[in-house]
Length: 288
Image (cartoon, helix red, strand yellow):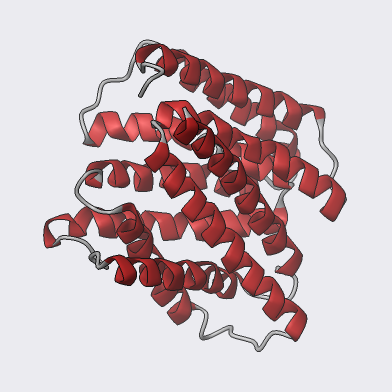
């Protein structure tokens, strides 16, 4: 029970850290390019994961047998981060956060397709409920520029593919190795892509870039260890706290308003997550 409580705290802190990263991305977007942001976001995680792996004597890149799923995880994860950062600069933080939280839908669908996992009877209505929430959140923006919110939704799709690859590697590749592989790939690719538009940022933005990396690393590490300390079914629901964090940060830091459609979308998606969580809790004994 103690480890489960620790996992819940780690998940709540992870969601807060990712929400803070998202807010800093938007604040710094006016003077720093997306690829520079993505580069710094992954550089810090790469250094931290490298230090821990070397200290523990673990593999940096994992077994040769799992390089294809690791590459796919890194590729789709990188594409997802780029789209998330672009969406963050042009849309309300609460909208981006809640659309990004539809990733469990895509994990279920891709796990069924690629891992041949069965979808339980509760997952179908949960998927429909979450999709209804996503539509509610996107509907008002369809009257103007829908592209940032479409990118936020596509981020969830690519995250679903990335997380499916992680599930494929579970038990065979250390979670920190997965983080290092992804961070190394993203740092190299973002570093190459940022060269044509690279600008030397002022000191204020250097600090912002460092914060993006620190918050991203904190979120990633908190998430990883939360899933190590307790079953996913016991802690995954707490990741939805990121919707609340992002809405509050958007309101107080960025002067964004929380619309009724966003609140409805958040309610529907969180309800879907809670339904799935309660269903899984019945299947997982409390002692686990």
